[in-house]
Every structure is written in structure tokens, then in C-alpha cells.
Length: 296
Image 1 (cartoon, rainbow, N blue to C red):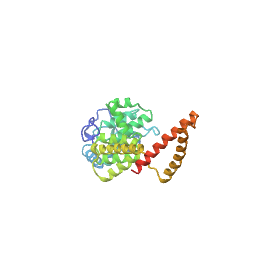
Image 2: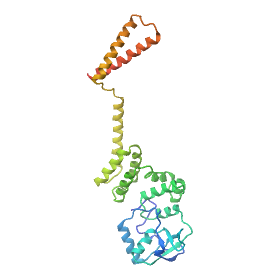
Image 3: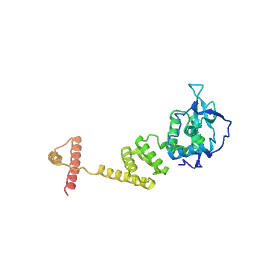
Image 4: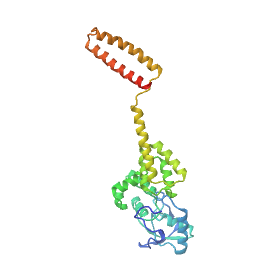
């Protein structure tokens, strides 16, 4: 599945011949890179590559670096799939370009410019480069040919998002159930405000087997707006008073009325006490209005 517009073509074996000077290296001396940013691999694509290698050999050299712990061995930095499938195809050696170093950013760029690195692999890789202070977001964007806004959006797909949501969205994406980046981006953002609700919603949607796009995400967003408005109304709604509270108001009200009577007769001279009596009266009137509305 193509990643972005920058990715073209359908067969990595046809992306170009050995343009850099290469040598044949024993496949068993080359180890896979544990930091390879590409994680999702389609069985169909892998089988097709094996058949292509059997038919035409390796058309594009892999890039390897010396193993840091063993001077007789190498680590592949660009071409993990070609190395793996060359072994499956029965090859003993593979054309390789040996470089002194090949940074994670170089590796990410090489993977993006080829076919089947998913948007989630890319997002994880961008965040790892930033977190480990290997490269800044702007630098990564320039290397990939993205503007800063696009780089930020891709990174946010997996940054501070619950793993359950990432796993389900990635599964749906790989199954072809969700191809709309905007929909996945909106879900990731919604989950930061409503984590529990979005976790349940995404799990339920993944289990349904339905396609996920912006129309479904808009329905979810609208539901959050409706729920929030309802909650606000309930928050501002006058409270319902139970029998005990009403009895307490009645007792308090009797005391207030007695003091109001004294005030009307001019028997309360202290100004602070006069203000207190008037405040009690205002509170009593408000309570009585609520009770009246409750039983109306």
C-alpha cells in the first residue's frame, strides 16, 4: 500500500539498478537492523519479491555498515526486505554498498521513498528520532520532503495516544478498512480529550469490519458535542431537593422569618446583623422557588 504521494511504483525490485559501487557480500555475514523503521510487511508482497529475486536477481544493492561489535560482520541499514527475501530465494551473496555510517534519518528517508512503509511506521520513527534527540521535527520534514505542518500531523498520529487505539487503527489501516489519514488523525486528537470513550469506540468499530472514514468520525465528534451540551445543562440545572433537605429549609426558614419580623419592627439595630438577615431572606426565597419548580 502506497504511503504518500512521494511513493510511486509497485515493485521495489524495479526501483533502480546498482547506481552506487557495490560488492558481493555473504548474506550470512549481514544482520538485520533492530531499528528498522518498517514494521508492517504484507505476506503477498514478500512472496512476490522472492519470486522476482529468483527470476531476476537483486537489481538494487543494499546498504550496510560495519557491525559495531564484530569487525567480520555487517548490519543492513537499507534493504532489510531484500536481504531477508534473498535468503528465502536461496541466494548465498547479495550486492551491497558498505558505508562507514548511515543515520536513522537516512534510513527513514530511504524507506519513505520506497513502497510499503506504513504511515504508522513513519509516525513511530519520527517520534523516536525527536525523542532521542537525533533530529528535530523541521529537519526530519526537510529530509522527507514534507512541510512542518505535515510532519507534525504524521507525528501526532502516535504521540501521546493510547496503545490500544494505535493498534486498532493500524490494524484497520493494514486491512484496508481505513485509508483516510484525516480520519485517523482526527481520532488520535479526539482520544487526547476523551481517551476512555475513544478506546471503546475504536475497539467496537474494528470488530465491526466496516470501513472507517471522515463521515464516521464526524458522527463521533458530534456525539461528543451533544454529550457536552447535555452535561452543561445538567450542571446548571437547579438541584432536586429531597424530603430531608426540604425539612431543613423549612426549619431554617422559620428562624429567618422570626428575625425578619424583628427587623420590620425596628428591633435589629446592628448594621451587620441587618445585612445578614436580608441575605438569609434572599437565600430562603431562592430555596422556596426551587421547591416550587420541583413540585409544579
